[in-house]
Image (tube, rainbow, N blue to C red; front, side, top):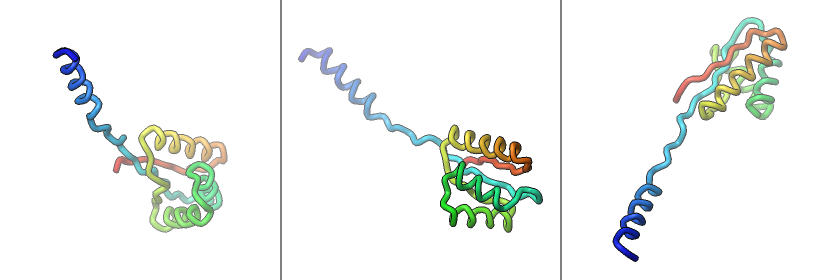
Length: 104
């Protein structure tokens, strides 16, 4: 191995040892309103957020009693997609249900 090959190998090892950063995470929230039915919120939680029936009811009650509930923690693109899906499904069903996301 010549001097140049050894130097190239050291540079390659240094560049592959760089830390891979975790993507930023966001929490997706549902907000209470006076018109969206509890059944619809449970349906959204089960179908969009893949929650079990018992978890969906627990989160829905949190939204109902506290004004907001956490649906889950996701990377930015996934969180945006889920928020948009909630808004689309709610509008199609005639409900004003709102979802949002915030960084954690």
